[in-house]
Amino acid sequence: MSNEIIKGPGWILTKLEWLINWGRKRSPWPLPYGTACCGIEMMAALASGYDMARFGAERPSFSPRQADVLIEAGTITKKMVPILRRIYDQMAEPKWVIAMGACACTGGVFRTYSTLQGIDQVIPVDVYVPGCPPRPEGLIYALMKIIEKIEKDHPLYNKAKEFERSERGCACS
Image (cartoon, rainbow, N blue to C red; front, side, top):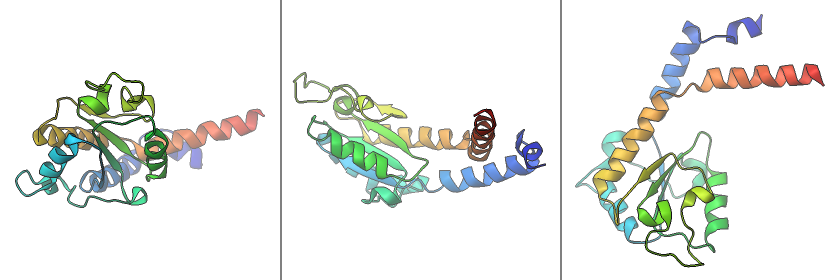
């Protein structure tokens, strides 16, 4: 009986997913991880001039357990990699990552042995913001792309599919 209910995206499941996504898209809690000049631009985006609070991201969280959007702004050295990975792992699910600036996206002008050539080598990135340094409008655009991604998410349907796969896996072994 329970498997029949969760097989397709029915009316109840669709409305519940819409409600969950509505709540998530109205309150993305960013975790700022600014390591270089891009961090200054990130601060400008959070300030009153650009006012990222219009999109619900008015509360930058400095605890990874209370954040769901990691904004990595700036250069990452290889010494910082374990810390960045730990912060990402401690964030609540679901989580999204914005790589802000040329240094975060590709290493930028720093082609040295100690600089990480893109944070996507360590953590998955959802939106890249190019530029050196990128403008605050770029970060706000990236946040809007994250919000669009949240709107298209199917959290309950994916969980139901995952549960169904695990049930089948248990029956086979």
